Image (cartoon, helix red, strand yellow):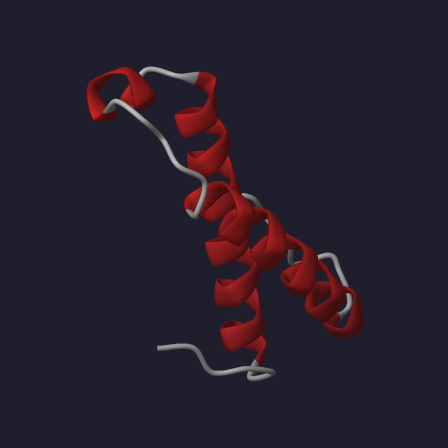
Length: 69
């Protein structure tokens, strides 16, 4: 998971908006054939977007700046 501990809380909140937008755009895109999707570049990009979003959320929770379920 990426390390976001060096960023300020304000910058992380800005990054959270961008990361969620990227994640949502990739997650809601029609994927077609599921078997082919798992091996595609789109699946890898979705996985990276998910990791980025979750890492930012985890850092904000650790700092007590946000609560996520």
